[in-house]
Image (cartoon, rainbow, N blue to C red; front, side, top):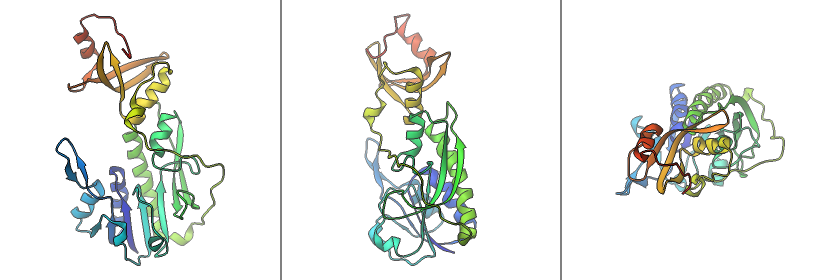
Length: 268
């Protein structure tokens, strides 16, 4: 089968690997343009860009360059709205990491963790001109553990998505599309402001915030810190790893040693 792949993020790479290893002909790979990274703002290609180049596949960073007639277009975490010239060129399918119609939009995994969901699903769906609203060909449920982080779930979704897509591409006509049922909910992009910890929230809510976003920002005894890893034990928040401003990450005990027995004041 002749396929065009579209994607950007790290967790997409194992899924695209599965497509390539299944023997399909990859006509082109579309991904986001390189972005400036770090203090020196060095233009850095996306993980999918690097993957495509490592396999000597033609890679494009502007959707306006699309001029192909494949058998299938496969889209996973691309981050670009598809134009009519793409949608009309071939059947277009998407791997979406939520139990649609719940959590349409840009941050389904982070939102599920942030909200403390214990289950979610991966859906293989048809792409339409309405965001994440297409019929579903395949759905696989998975559990979210109480300490699972965004990278943990992305890794799991990669594995499940690769299996689903490989099965589907081997016999697309064998899967009947099913309309989405229920009231849609939508996610948004999280920002740095979402990392700020509100200490009036419950330990579980703060824990979910940190594991979803990768860090929670606050002050402890007047020092700006990022809390990197937590647990909830006996209904209390236990801090495991922390990073004071300008310093390397450290365990909580090392941070406490630096306070020299001073009373701990969160948010101050």
